[in-house]
Image 1 (spheres, helix red, strand yellow):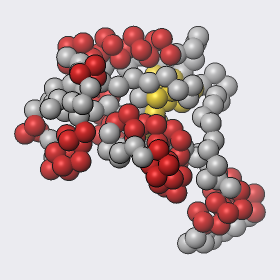
Image 2 (image 1 turned 45 degrees about the vertical axis):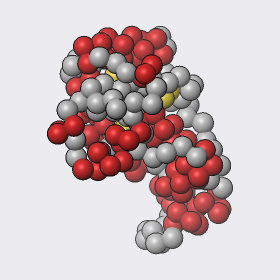
Image 3 (image 1 turned 90 degrees about the vertical axis):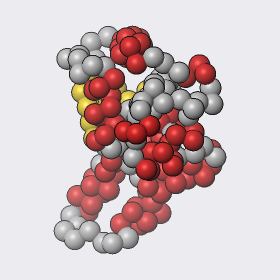
Length: 183
């Protein structure tokens, strides 16, 4: 997980290999276990994660836990033992991730995809809510052209990094928690 201010939480917990999909075995498992500091017992994960969220939460604010894949939200809920605080709110942001900017992030940083922390950092970097919708509504366009993303990228330079910020007292976080066994 990564906050808009850059605080990070990452943990690797044991998870039965037989419950992993072939994709997870091929793309995710080889990236795990490289740093023993990331290992966390399942029994400790909920406590550590809740403590971290309390630490990064600012006074009386709603914390939006953003995820780009519904399985990430399910894994998050499982990791906190389905005890979501009233100030936590999930937000599916897959349609707000700019794929061009996401590609640029991985290309520039050299970080690997399908690693929870890297993906959280990349999603934070590529998060662009309402850019296309706002510009299209301003112009009164009824039909969205096929190359809308490229046109907006050129016209508004949306490949330039935007910093996630506040909306009132609300902050946005990227969420992606791995659930697999260390190697």
